Amino acid sequence: MTITVRNFINGELVAAQSGKTFQSINPATEEVLAVAPDSTSADVDAAVQAAKSAYNAWRLTPAPRRGEILYRVAEILKERKEELSALMTQEMGKIIAETRGDVQEAIDMAYYMGGEGRRLMGYTSPVEMPNKFGMALRDSVGIVGLITPWNFPVAVPSWKILPALIAGNSIVWKPGEDVPASAEMFAQAFADAGLPAGVLNVVNGFGPDAGGPLVAHPDVRILSFTGSTDTGIAVYTKAASLGKKVTLEMGGKNAIIVMDDANLDLAVDAITWSAYGTTGQRCTATSRLIVQKGIKPRLMEALVAKAKSIRMGDGLDPNVDMGPLVNPKALEKVSSYMDVAKSEGVKILTGGAPADIEKGYFFQPTLFDGVEAGMRVEQEEIFGPVLSVIEVADFAEAVKVNNSTRYGLSSSIFTENVNDAFRAIRDLTTGIVYINHGTTGAEIQFPFGGTRGTGNGMREAGQAALTSFTEWKSVYVDYSGRLQRAQIDTEDVLSRELTSD
Image (cartoon, rainbow, N blue to C red; front, top):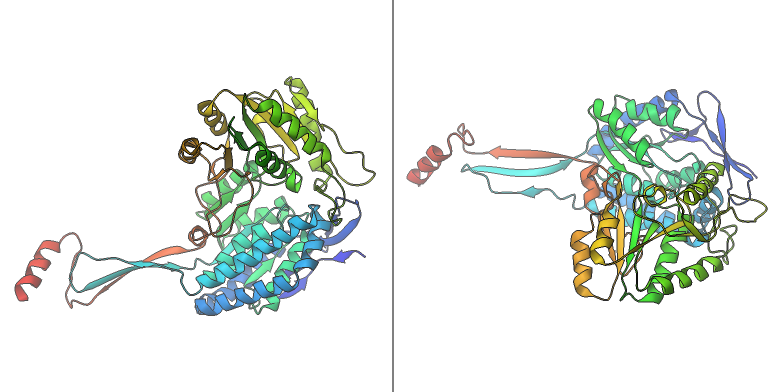
């Protein structure tokens, strides 16, 4: 049965004003799963106006009360975890164990940000004048526009929605066009938890017709985008020209470094999971393997065997290890890099072609060898189950190769040498660094984001997320009963006070 998805505006489920729709396809079966509104600027404006009307009452709701609603969101998601996870697997393809983890991340974030309702900490500090008090407070900003991808239909939106809400903002959210049904179910949890109408609005559609108007809308003060680097830079450029605050989370070309002294079995398990989990469709997925020469032969043998043992199929089957790519366009893109690899003289040790499965957008787990730093397959984000192996002589060369990309999201090193581990922490120029673990698996209590072409210096998750969705307000209370001019009268005023005492 095909699901009919609606936009969620001012607490009501509504069709696009144009009446146009698009289809959400199950990538494992190629069947139509849902039909969703193909929204335009008119729908975006309606959502923004709803958010604008709801904002004042929401910002004046005491933050602890806002937090209580987020706690209820967490409880509802716990109750609906299996249903939502199954829908996500059908809509975007990753295996059910991973979509359960996706939902769990949102549950964790709801509890975490709900707790911030009783903190939202600012700070006080001594001031330079007598009989004067100073403090800095976090303040809501207004309407937040969110644009999120399809690969984490619930977790990534939760990193944005929950801190934005606890800070007192109202929201217009455009989800990834491959996951409209998952977005609707997620938004329903907020409505059922008692979030007032208009505080969270969802507009489905595509970038040019829905995303673009959201970025440009004059009443949207903050934009938070997760997606490709090229699109992110375009969003940033447009929004900056309009004076908007922007947070970006974009591409990655993440690497695991394996030194000769590494725990081989642990490294093999971690590399396999990080490279082929989510079919390589994570911004933190491992797409480069930087290997010291001595351990490389044994590591390659083990990795090829592991890759060949991966079971592909419908992610709802608990025996499946890897699901399909999200759509035909993704399959075409990953396939095209096989020709790139061959043109660069790269050896394909295993995989290298679509899987021989009757239905679905499946691609074999692929391992490239003989890759050199600077090659396209080593530098460009393929976003599929493809791992490029670069051989290095020593630690210094490994760090140099790791840092020499357009991106700077996540990196990892496997070593039993504590000195090399701490040098890696110091020298790897990525926003996330792992020691003896893969490049995936960030937790919600720490900042998430990257350097260079991965982001613009802002972070999601943890306390850092609040900075993305608040403005600082400095407050001074002068109870001296006289005009005290900071920096000008400091010495004279202090002298008078001391003399009068």
